[in-house]
Image (cartoon, rainbow, N blue to C red):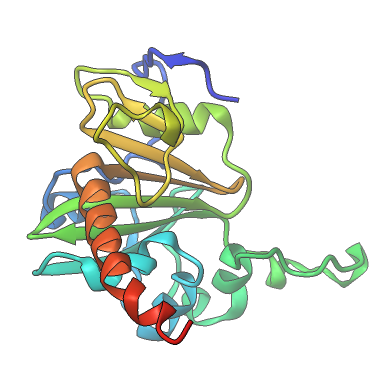
Length: 226
């Protein structure tokens, strides 16, 4: 459960495993920091396609402003650099499938089948700058990790819980919203127990208005014949 107002202090939190993305920064800056921490770019098309299954941002891909890029990254929990063989095997798939793999008797498990633990990061870059980031973990994200991720993005402001019904008049959300930064610049949404999506309010509003426009234009055609 989130605190009603998250006044976040992260100076005593020493985990470097989460220090990856920042909304509004360049791809080069993000990747430079990630690679220095033994993170990797998931450049294999097949792996990326599987990892993006069910991601809410894909519903708005047709509205992405150009030029844009969607990049996927991985960072292990222990800070080690994953081997290429691990990425090409089923280990990564088991770690990040939308539904967890079937449970097996303990006697059938072996060290060779141990799943790859860590964080997957999806970033939507619009005109070279990060506009949306999804942090997806191989197991449940703790409240401390959520607070840390939000703290990385708090700037000079703080985060508060909010629902779509509580947005100010004239403000809307296409992606859904659980938290908003008090200055209104950023929003966040929990995606189940293992993922957190952080995105700019401007991007969210942009998606909403283009989706609304499309729905309005399609309405006459969809009801024709009644």
